[in-house]
Image 1 (cartoon, helix red, strand yellow):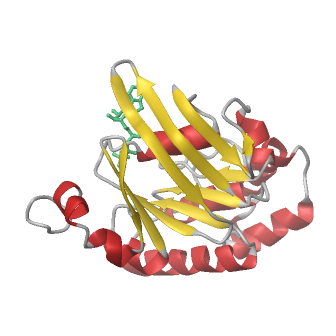
Image 2 (cartoon, rainbow, N blue to C red; image 1 turned 45 degrees about the horizontal axis):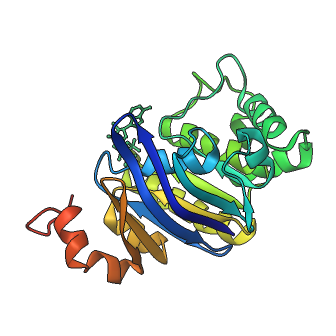
Length: 239
Ligand SMILES: Nc1ncnc2c1ncn2[C@@H]1O[C@H](COP(=O)(O)OP(=O)(O)OP(=O)(O)O)[C@@H](O)[C@H]1O
């Protein structure tokens, strides 16, 4: 469904994303990993329309969306979350979903919102102030809920699991697996923890200094000498 063809993003002299070609299929759960500053978030920004690539093509279902505005990409089925949850201040959880849904679909679908609140475990918190009334796990769930409210076919998840303690992380991973099956959404997830990626994803892509250096099953990728050198360090230990 999504095809990146030699995509590059530059900030001045820095090639933050450097000639990346990658395909994501409708049934993929793809892990995107790499050291800090490798270009993962920038790649998400290019796909979702927050930054414009200096070169290369981004295609969704074969159509070039490289110059398509952000909201239109959302309406084509691209959903994303942000690394640092930023709910709208002075709006409730439910109102945050309404705003996100209106942006991403152009309308408000109460049934979908109720379904998403229920699915993400936020139904009991729907009336809370989203910026001040939620714990970290709930804030992360709200990020996913906002994206889900827009009926995405592909969800880009930027470190949604980071900072969660073990039990909450396990529950959250279960929710992501269910989401993939129940809503038929393809997932690309940025995550630093290798064990998490290996358990959640059938496929892993590795970025290093803006370049894609590996793309395969977790087994293939994490045993690739180039990945071990660059991502895991010279000793091959955990990052
Ligand atoms: N708006 C910007 N202006 C200038 N440089 C930027 C900008 N955004 C990102 N960069 C730089 O681009 C490179 C890639 O950053 P990016 O945030 O995409 O990496 P990342 O792999 O997501 O890192 P992390 O794992 O730390 O989140 C870094 O060197 C970063 O400093």
